Image (cartoon, rainbow, N blue to C red):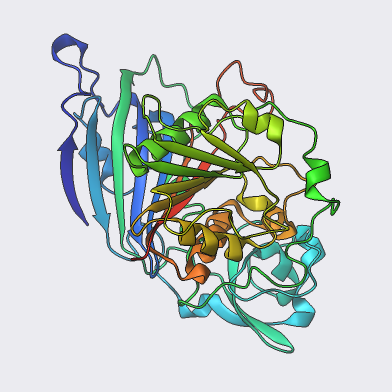
Length: 422
């Protein structure tokens, strides 16, 4: 494990106003896990507030590295395989008879596992594996499926992966008292999910098996979306994250395609684009989007070919809509056609969608598996390079948000992007 320190000089306080991380204090931290898979680079970010530097479990060496740091400073550590999560063990990869597969135990309808997919370990409770019971939600991966058995991998998804972990100080303060309470296992929190978005051994994941694109309502999409919905679907903090991400990835000007657009495009504030083409399903929603310079109504599930010339856009984005496509690889491939070489295509989503129109596989997936699904669309299109995935969670939900009574945390943000091959 190696350590280095980075300072954002514009963010740190000075003199008596400095907030310093101490052993007997509380800290607000932004963690960032960086790692490289076979097909993409990955950043998984999580914010944690009120971390008890004495009681909570932090990754090895991170607490000592943070002591004395001030607001705005970032500490980074490198972890060799096996140092942050348990290294791969051969005994955790085993063959499971299909007769021992119990999908109803996890509420799954599919009677057979699919190659590369992640499932809750509870479906294996009949296989006689120590510690695995029907309510176990910890994911395992299906490596291969045969006629009578399948290969299951119970290793951590990040086993064998070199990791870089950063922690940025967002705030620090003294504790008023220490009167007991629960400890947080931040190691488990930070590594719960990341890794699931990778392919298994470089082989394509079978997201497209057995009615994967079925939807609860199969009526004509144009009928379902005929009534305008003049709302945004995510909370304010999640949308700010998406807007910041677009600010980093989109060009300063030029032509942008807003795929599956609605009343708002979430473009960076103050950025002036020469052309913003919005393609969606409801004319009234598009007409109420002030960012658009042109508006096209088209059902991509009926016609996946976009009504634009080759190489006509400098960037494309799709916000909180990819889960409704029934021909997603064809659409992603045609997005590449209308992009200029090296132009980015950015897909963002969260954990909210219209249940009647989301494809079945989307609803069945682990949240980080949805990252893998969207990444798989990019890979199968064979049209993009420089692939990335991103996740952010842990922000408090805005107090005035309509869903404040459901959860204290803001909607998570997930993103996948790549650049058009030359």
